[in-house]
Image (cartoon, rainbow, N blue to C red; front, side, top):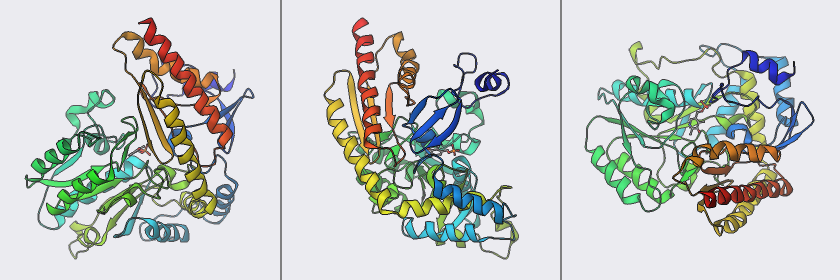
Length: 429
Ligand SMILES: *Cc1c(COP(=O)(O)O)cnc(C)c1O
């Protein structure tokens, strides 16, 4: 049996209908933006392996630092103990995070970073003797797959079996262009209630919703309403962090600063699982008390794992390099030129771009061909050795920053080819 067949006998893959899924693609090596298959093919990773990879696969600097850390200290309990990698990474992050963030809490991934943020916010109000219980979120948001994270995410088909278990959330519309006033009005109404603990949001780009984008000005308005009404603000920068939107954090486009920030994905350059939740002094001090019941009772076995923190540190070195900033600017400019091209094509409903992220939304046809369009587009790209994962009728690129101009052109050509596929299907309707 080859690797894919051995896998298929015993492994259950994420977000995969195992009954109908094709055999998984066996990857034996990675380098830069490229993945190498067992049978000798080379695939361009145009989605950064689920949005995590920033500087390329098997990056030598990260690999060296991780190897050194493994030979020095692989892990140590983080309650009552500490280690250099965790402290230095926290110092580095606080230097670049939005103003006001000054405490770092470690966990394992994006979902746990969100769980920690929600629990911090809710317990903050409890500790200060003013208990509040409700969270506000965007209707189409995605904050992870654990129960708290699912609760504050869109009530979609993905979570339908669990709806009755999810806690109550006040949803407001995403303030996409044209819907700004509506979203502001909804939040103003909700803010009148006394029971609102926090507002959690994906700043500027809602990833899983289909790279849905909105302007910083309206987010500033929403955050101002929160600040005026004693509602804590939680910026979920799990996807947008570390340069994705053109600035180090999407929150850097804003005047209003968040109370809490969630990070993961690019935090280790896409090498290891690590989550971070940071908060401001006001929240942190609400947990300082002689009464032990005010403690933040949360922690994971691998909290602040030294190897993951070492990957975070090495990744931070790369973020600071001039070359990385040039790459981000280069990809942003290339995307903008490509956007102008595809915008002209028929059956393209909208093209959106924010920094290194570009999304092309094809017209959603009303008929049944459409339900299979996503798989057709996915296979079409993979046949041409490009990894793209459409979200329904939306195709997006979120590449590692090291992707070359030539590789980018190859990805653009595949998307232009996809357009022909869509146009054909539409005219056959
Ligand atoms: C991916 C994602 C998460 C969840 O992160 P995981 O590491 O997959 O649990 C949370 N929030 C946002 C905005 C994300 O894109």
